Image (cartoon, rainbow, N blue to C red; front, side, top):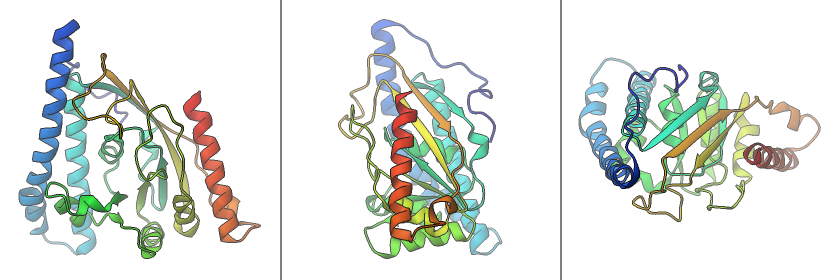
Length: 268
């Protein structure tokens, strides 16, 4: 998809001082409200209507994911144009390839929104609670995302998606990074990659000042506008870790490699 920072027809809202803070607080609240409303509209109207169109299960799944991607893209544009944040996405055109596993760090609540917004047909490992949330359960089910429900079958289900040629987004931390702490990756993401990925592509995400972290409620916004930077790194070949080692050792090596890589790139 086109570079996110080059196709914006409108400039973000600009205010100063107290007025700027109050406006961003209001716009942040509106962003949350619109996200919930959008989830209901997708669940109750858009996705059911798309499901009535002709096509097999694969076509219906692709339509659902494309609709979610478009909704997320519009949501990103609202946050940008209302002045809640500014953002840069370097290398977005390299995402969305068949069998590609996208591994990203997880500094804020909106990371997955940015990624899915720029990938038309992406699968994603999502936490189990989203399958019960009335605003999100419809979209995640119709998109056939992978549920991180803790079952032994989850790793194989994710690997199967990659073997089928799907693009899969994974956050190896499993939850948002604690403010001021480096990311800590669980080995499950590496195990999935070695089971099914054709290529592994890291995405380094920085959010400054921090916002929407696990320790911050939505209304505790920073004193200045947030800048979100997403940068796509160099591809990693899974076979380079499996050539001379059994899978458990290869998985540990890949996880350690990814951890060192993200620590290096995020501290630069």
